[in-house]
Image: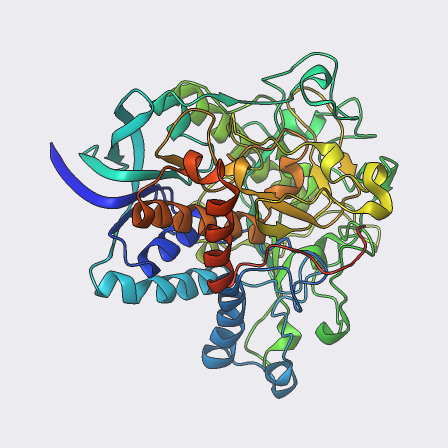
Length: 536
């Protein structure tokens, strides 16, 4: 079997993986990065979800390289898209004018920008990308990983990857079981974490819903798809806490749990510049069309877009029938197929039975836009994963460290080993254990270095949703800018440890060494403390 060697091997090319590979290559290290899907970028691209960000993202609260990504997305639109002069002139251009984010955009644009960010390192020979490959086994001795074997998705050909550090940037923490790294899944008990919203007993199979998103537009004509095989099942499906059928515009409000009716109005004649994307105002999903709209046709010259583009990542596509972590491959794929069937059923319901404001039913002019998501089947390339395996870390971030109700005016706990910052409400979607939304106000928080260091393993680092959070705190550490920050720090930590010939554990055990590393992060543009601001 062919063997490839690098200083740092990054398994997974989502946002955390890209940030880790970019940081390590920037530090002059030889890097290999693998990715299971055709697109790098994870939740921002192959999963098709525009960035979920905090309210101050335009001013502060992101790493320098994440800001370069955001600026690159806007510049790509100015360079390549037929924007109106008014849209082109806006420094805070929001191409989709979605209410969920100040930068809603098509996934291919973020893909192009990330590829451009990595291109110089590929050209210089510092970075090698392997796609589409996923990890299937690992070798090691004691507390160290020596190699990871990856397999090609289409040919089943395998490669052995060896390195001095391995970074797990997979969506589900796939390296953790392969390497024997201690980890946790699902909901921890209150006895273990002391969290106000934790259950009395641990629930390892109680995990957040997975969703398979899709993009639609609305044009003249009849574009109704064939009735999905399991449509009748999903049409009649009614969770106990939902307040009606899952396929419907009524659903619990995430913050109040009141049964609330959403609006759906394709192609409103609204002004993109007037859209306020601020999570402090509310959940934002009361109008499903504009909630995650990724192209607002009014931002473009007349005739450029026949319709807006709307990303469907709504409550009704959440698949919480069963967990998908730690399943045999065949069972895992069966549940993803069921999640896809749910998404097709939602789309068919929208086309044929969804109530309209004029009293009619169905929107037959809706089209699946697989060309936007890069697929023939019409849905997103990859499932939207909200929750992963999580390492048993030197530091575990718990709800009472950052809950607005618990911390109040004191703000989130200050970690002396902070390596980044983030902000989002604790946002837990309905779960496989039958839980309704858990949505908790949050203080602007820090990312402790100890949450990135496993309790035992010495050369394996997490780079995404697999850090030392809990089921609850993962709900605010899983979003785009935080995942990027975590990945970037993982890449810099591995590089720094190679430069200084020490382990992450040894670095973290010394205040002086930790401060030296934090000084390096500051030079790299990593923000580690918040200014005085209030949570929401």
